[in-house]
Image (cartoon, rainbow, N blue to C red; front, side, top):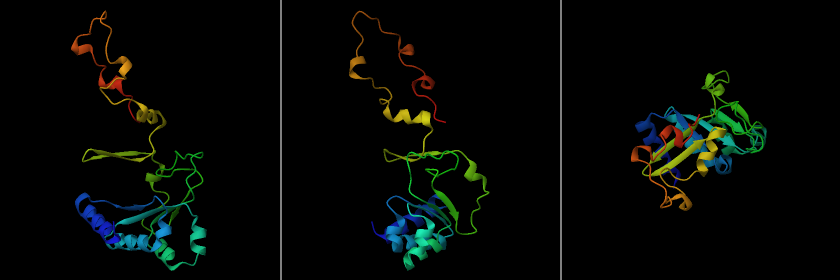
Length: 185
């Protein structure tokens, strides 16, 4: 997909969904600084915010002396820097993966004192055209949900009751929804 197509999709989403901003992450946005800076500039031109996650630290990025990196930084409102480290989970700062990562407010658009940073981790689930997209970190008790069989399906070893057992009436054959899957918090 070209940068122009991504920009068109971003602009359409801003129009249709009233989004607040964009987030650049996955891979490394600064490895593609020119294209990332173009997206960030176009987002700012539409009044959208720009949040960037990078495995590099801010000091490393500034020391590069790379015009495209500097351009991306100048169009970034919030930078989360440092590599994600699975062994250092961070549950006290919203949207931050590990405790070694730092948050830099590079514009006046957001403030560290904003309450959104003290909210719990969130999990966003989107179902579009039969595909489920999951963003964020689930609560620890929800992580087992990924390992459960699909609702309504039982393992083959439990699929048929022995002939000597009588079947329960239909009204008792399924556990209530509140018991079949634990709530996600």
